[in-house]
Image (cartoon, rainbow, N blue to C red):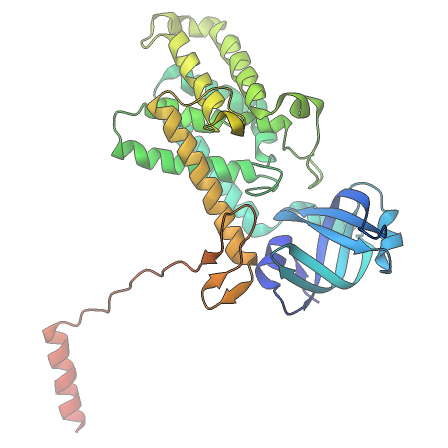
Length: 361
């Protein structure tokens, strides 16, 4: 059988079962009980393309095997796969631990995702390189030097959108493309500030949603659990800013306009307000054009990623109508295709065709 990634399995599986192998790393494991007090396992799996949860019932042969798997084990699950509004489900499953050679291949990740993330990384470097304010430009460069490798293996979330190794790079790159394009529409926005805000808005997730160098299981850290990514992001930017400001080569920052302290405060405000509402975790609300822009660009890209994933896995209820997928609010409808105009045939070309037909006659 073909070896699928999680993303491929979600795109392919539906109500009718498909037979497939999928290589996975165990991300989490919990023994739970049904309402009738029957135990079952809830396993969280991940690969380079994403993750999913799978329930293994006590009467299934895999139950006793999976219960004893060590944390982070890499396995190949084989069997019949279906998918509904609650996600993927497997039946008649068998499993084996991957060999050393298979583990090394598995850790290289999906080639398509690797290529996309490489392109996205180059986009981030190029757009940050175009920042003209020397303070924000220097701050971005310092971040890349200190945390670039860490950044490239961090997810944008634990679930819902870009919840995969390197997902934060994809999210930030797409947000930067949107921000850069919209700055042409709203020329009074501070482009340098907004691009830097996009880079740093989720930088705290390096301690909340990151991955080890050799696996696809997100790390849990005390800093991430106790503070969350917004306070951590503010701390990171303040640390980098003080470090660069104290450098002798940056003494000229003192005479720049707008004042360096104002630039720092505006950048911190973008990080603090990007969730947009107190109930969503922002310690303050957006108060500048760039803060509103960052909030909506962030939300837009997250929603577009959720939609893409939902269309790939949703059950079709009726022609062009798809079942609701959490956390989206309602059933989906297939998007309208673009109109493709018919090719225009010139009179000269039409005459040539008629002459050809006469000759053939």
